[in-house]
Length: 171
Image (cartoon, rainbow, N blue to C red):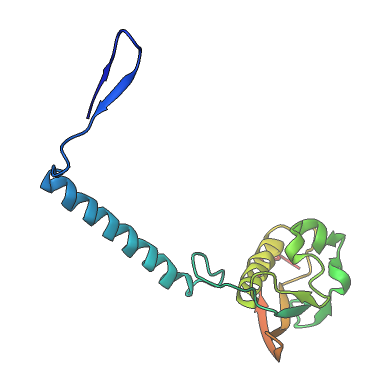
C-alpha cells in the first residue's frame, strides 16, 4: 500500500489495491501453515499438561477441593523414627526454611491449592532441600513425610515420601 500526502491540505490518503487483488501464493500458504502450527502446539501443550503434576497448560476450570495433612518424621541411622512436632527440630523450623505460604504448617489440615499431586511434588522437593540444607542436624539419616489427603472429599488416601539418605560421616 502506498501513502501519499497532499502538500496543500496536509491530508494523508491511502491507496488500496483493487478489491480482487490477492496476496502472493507463498504468503497465503505461509499464513495457513503458521496458523496450523500454532493450533498444533497449543493442543500439544494442553494434552501434555495432564502428565505433569502441576497441570501447566492443562484446562481445569475449577480447583480441586482437596485437603491434606503431613506427619513429618526424622529417621535415625538405627531406624528410630522421631516425630517432628510443628516442624521444629535441632534448631530448625520448617516454616522459616521453606518460606513458601502454600507449604507452611503442613501438619495441619490444609487446602491443596493446586491439587494434591502438585502439593505432593512440592513436598517431595521441599524434603530434598531440607535434607541438603540442614547441616547442624548430624543425627538424621533422612526425612520422611506421610501425607494423608482427601481428593475432592473422597478418601482418605495415604502416600509416603522421603528425602534421600544423607551423608552423616563418622558417628
